[in-house]
Amino acid sequence: MSDSYPRDLIGYGAHPPHAAWPNGARLALQIVMNYEEGSEYSIPDGDGNSEMYLTEVPGATVGPGKRDLIVESVYEYGSRAGFWRLMRMFAERNIDVTVFGAALALERNPEAAHAIAAAGHEVCSHGWRWIGFQDMDVDEERAQMQRAIRSIERTIGQRPLGWYCRYAPSINTRKLVVEEGGFLYDSDAYNDDLPYWVRVDGKPHLVIPYTLDANDMKFSVAPGFTSGDGFFNYLKDAFDVLYAEGATAPKMMSVGLHPRLAGRPGRAASLARFLDYVLEHADVWVARRVDIARHWIAHHPAEKSL
Image 1 (tube, helix red, strand yellow):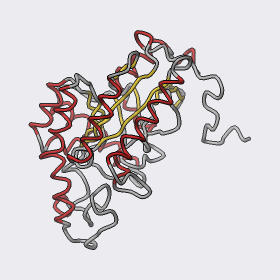
Image 2: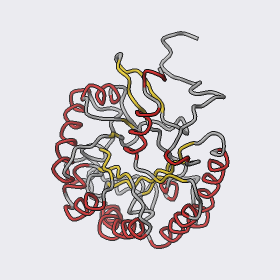
Image 3: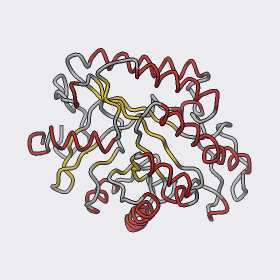
């Protein structure tokens, strides 16, 4: 294999490190709420098309250059109703989450931004807007990253310490995260059940992988979930496997949520069942991503891992 090959297909292999989660936890559960409503592709924001992704009617389009009022309305449900339902569910169970927050979306709903900050949830930067980064030139991407940081600092009261793109990052994204210097981690990866270190331009950088399978997005893409029971059973099965493995090799589990999807009543019911199931178990650390990052930095420092 060439030393210049840009992928790591091996990772921790057969011998992952013992995570040493706080209080001997067998599993670190990390819940993400993606807050994007009002930052997606839209004609009023000068885009050439309306949003077509993660809606209730997959693949529907009114054509380029036209406002899709149905999609706009679906997204508005997330900010108007779904967000508050999820926030109540977390508060009732004393669960801290990470919000993948698109900066413009938070700016457009100050009440939601205030509620997130007041609850102590982490905001990980989800970009200035919820738009693709994969084709963005490096100068524009850098400018949008810096704009997002400044915006979140104003709306939340502190700068974001994590970064996560809309699908997909560009080949420059991680370099720009490290260049900026103020982030503890990024989550633009789906390739492990534990955090891991990489070197970027000679500097150590922490990656905390995310999920596309234990994610309510699969209610809107095929093949995916067609019922709340399917969502609950998948999350439960993933939890059970990782919890069992955690007796000797503790792991991390991520769950991805969107207010316009999981915030709908028929899906929120299954999410509530899963959260209550988790809370029935001892030795589970429900944590924000920044908490996991700080733990990994303290207990698995880069100098011992790279």
